Length: 141
Image (cartoon, rainbow, N blue to C red; front, side, top):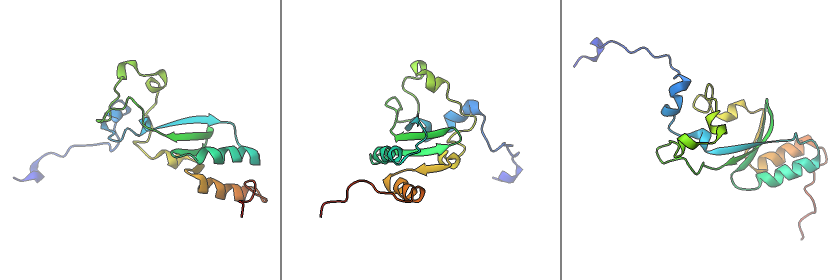
């Protein structure tokens, strides 16, 4: 069969937001929760943030909207096929989620000014930011 004779299908390369969720195979927006926090300024503020990112699945980032703690945790209503198990009764924040530009288009990290996925990353930042950084008492020895 000569496939060259078939007409080519024109594509824009980017799906419309109205059908983008149906094309997303990873349901990335349903695999984490973020909580905006006050901008950390003092060593104490960063100590608290270090404690938070010490927990598995917890990170922090700063973007144009401010500072956030991010929890990597899958929504309990996300089904194996990537669809919402409570779609008709989903929370308001889910209903108002705007997917004009979302993780389907680019990883969220691309928009972060600062990103701390774990303790070592944030600790390195703290040591650069504060000339005399110390994380408490020295280990017993």
